[in-house]
Length: 435
Ligand code: GTR
Image (tube, rainbow, N blue to C red):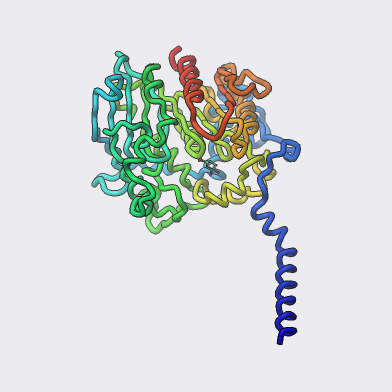
């Protein structure tokens, strides 16, 4: 009996061992370890943003605007972020809260609710605005989405609690893991409102999950269903995912900013951190009303070159966030060499408008060197369009920003948005938006 059991155990052990040995390559291929070794970055050649698909060279701005730019835009639509629908929704904006004496009197706070349907049912987006009171003329504004609800960006107790945040956090709230009171101002270190207001700029922010909650539900919630054709239940392989939806939200906020007489909508700087930096780049690429675009630690799928496969890769981003991009993007996972494009081409779509890419030294997951090279390789397009492009050949030292039409810095520290980052963005905006 004992012998029989032992024999069976040995057999089970042997079979499991065999299974592990045989499946290791497959498991490894599915979940490769992130590479952080510069020497292990594969050799690659970047597609030239100034060479047409058919091989012709782009030699002047008219060939860029007429031929190459539309080509590149189409590649990102079909292969990466998915097409944004062109259908216009019957959107209406309503000022739902106004305080002319906010932040101790230095600012006016407004909340503007955007209703996406005529009967005001369905998802709504709330734009929270702080505008400097001391300015007599229309003010330039930084537009940036937030991760945790508008009420988290500052302890100002008059800010409404974000409704969709309440819905998404229901479970945690019930279990007492999060309290509404504690969440107020919890992200304020990333939003130095007083500093921005003192410099004469306004801030407009939206909770990103107002547009599309950030989980993979087959696009049944958020704004996607508002665009489905009869019988359609999910986006097609070349139609938008969540990043495309957030980018759409940035543009709808711009629709409002254009109507606000306190704001100079020709001087709106779009800023986004991390996944919202990816969305800001995509919004700035599609919508040329944004005068400036700032990518804060946007990493893989943002400013960082994918072909380097350093830190986060296309394979890992698609595994963890399958809803961020269109389904056509899946084929490039663990297959970066087959990419017919790279992220420098996304950045080139923002040319000649000022673009700032920021990295953090410890944020290796976002590949700071890849972000730098993304910016550097967009420079040729900026120069073709008559600007000074990116005035750096090597990555600058930490804390030493480059302020050409393409701006860049790497600062000490982690994946985050800091006062140093904001100070650089304000200096960059002073230089390029106050000319
Ligand atoms: C990470 C993701 C990154 C980045 C980040 C964020 O988990 O891998 O691509 O977007 O989230 O948005 O904070």
